[in-house]
Image (cartoon, rainbow, N blue to C red; front, side, top):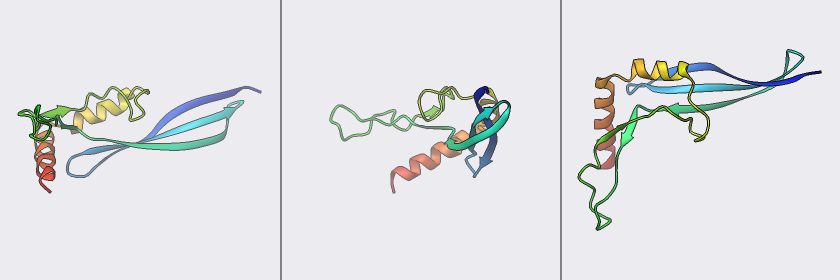
Length: 113
């Protein structure tokens, strides 16, 4: 009676005009090779974010606040688990320079709302 735990990334979807990458992760428990339990987790990755930050006065945006910072694709949102290569590969294909430029413009426009 051997129990085994594993993770499968069973859905990687690209959605929206800024190519957000949605990932579904299936956590499996098997007994003697037969699945006895599972659950799902989901997370979404964006191409990057704005640097943000303020000058010393604490209210004036920093000169580089609107600089775009690429998503480093190193950790899942839990901050611990490494992003698998298959997810990284999808991100690297769909997050072109044009997509990143458009997404940066969108983020800057959202700041003024």
